[in-house]
Image (cartoon, rainbow over all chains, first blue to last red; front, side):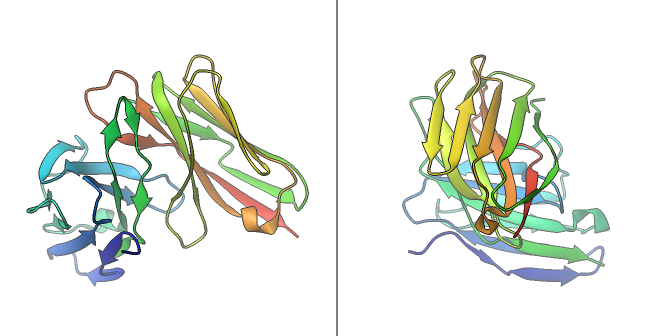
Length: 117
Length: 113
């Protein structure tokens, strides 16, 4: 296993279309995170999973966004009815988890660059 | 909600000069992590600080966690062109109900050879 994989690397879509991204975390990692990053900004938290359970979703996240991690392995992030403001790099990260009050380091994938025309 | 700010947003230095970026959180943190993102790349973990007043060194990089656990700094001595990239701090809110890392706004470092 060489790290966190994301697919596709790039996605161009028209406004109003639905898109789905996939993330394959490092195999022994329990936690999986989705972040969004726009140019010149830090990664913005979207949601995260502990195994198959979605533990938190950002309050800033529209209902058009949904994520799943059905078997506690890979995850998908779907955006329905895309808008131009959704254009960003979508980053997936995984970690071993949270132990004794300390957050394990995140391993990021290369991201999916979404462009909404 | 929790906010993590970094200054400066951008720094341009001559190779060999020192560089420092500062990270400030609106809330007390249980720990703080630092990541580096090369141009066109993804964030890569550098280090984690846990204790109040903690100082850690990695070769030319020195990381510090404030006594109140609300701020941190990264200092690079004698920058090299390989140091180019954006440096992010990421904090975990102390006593928070959830365990997500909140990333700072980042400092972009440019190094002129």
